[in-house]
Image (cartoon, rainbow, N blue to C red):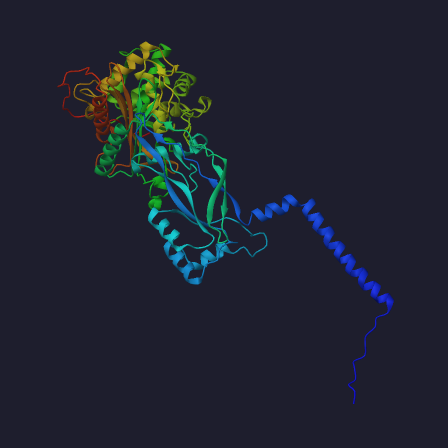
Length: 578
């Protein structure tokens, strides 16, 4: 029996033509699409293609070096490696990922989270996994040979002097951007400009060839500060010893060049190590010499005397009655530590008489005293350019009551910074000229502002010499072979609406050699609590040791006999009771 064949399917003529037309339209559509992509979007497609093997990498710029006035490095940037990844190219096994996490001290879950670009808008080509690795760890990461994991050369800031210059220099963040101090103030000059380069990577995402440098990195500028590292170390050592010996809460010291106004040393305690900021807190980070204010106490008396001398109402030998050691103004009473009786204007400074200072102040119009204080830089920034520097507080004279004018004469009712106070004393060390403060090294002195006459400045300077002589409040400020001029200050700290009874700020400000001043030094101890608290007992010795060391470092000629230091009991200045 013959086999039967399957019936043959014959499409109607219309359906055959329809199918042929559809195929033709499809081919035409594909050809048109290809022509559109190749013609209209050729650049776009090439860019996408290149992105599979070409990448542009940023090249970090060297941050400028900060040096002291003699070229000693204070802040430098050292090269370090950072680990980054391209999530699209990352293809590591769980075991490899675990090894990577162990090396860079991260949790594997955190690494996966950073590499997750599945979320909308999260697709990325560059993700940091760990910044600033040591060379040893970076080498071990390379040995893992992980696809999509790379090293990037960066720079980490290093401060050779550590805590000695911490408050002056400040520090940078992980991106090497200044956050405090000089690093922040001169960020634009120090930072430089990053560059970029184009590289080719293989199918595993590894860089195999440098194609071209698109933009070369531009290093930041180097900055030479006015700081003298040797004087800075000396100041830090002596202040630290004094803070510990007197069990003080904090302390500060400022050293200025009396001839140029350059800042040669600035120390605050407690301090911190900018290379390891694990223990840094607000108290340690504060640059107290510029950002904190305090009532300067008797260190302000020379400005009251200078105002009166300029006004012409008194002379250095004019006598004021200070007995019986008290002076009442309304319901308030001003007291001296010792009953002295009649005192010359010079002796008012030497003995640090609050009664005498108050009477001299009240002999002046309020505006006259205010103008002297204002012209001396109080109530305004020093213009140092340091971030966060405060201007202090000097209230308008038309708001003063008589008791406030009297207490202002010996440093109560006014707030100053330690840098302001040091700068103000250039008025007497520079023969009446207030020097501008500079944090940068100067090639030549800058003219200051003439505030008082040369005769007035020299007259006050002679009075300030008496402070360190027999009968003065600061015999401990004396230095073998040099004449010293300065003033002590001891003030109760503010507490609520009044003054704390047993908490003091002890200060000494002075300069030497008095015949031709080279340095101005201001010392402050906050809440000394080891028994002594007068400025002449706790702050003046720090001044003496730092000044003596600085003068000898600079080979400053003697202006007094080698045996000029005399031992005697100091007259304590008043603590500021009102």
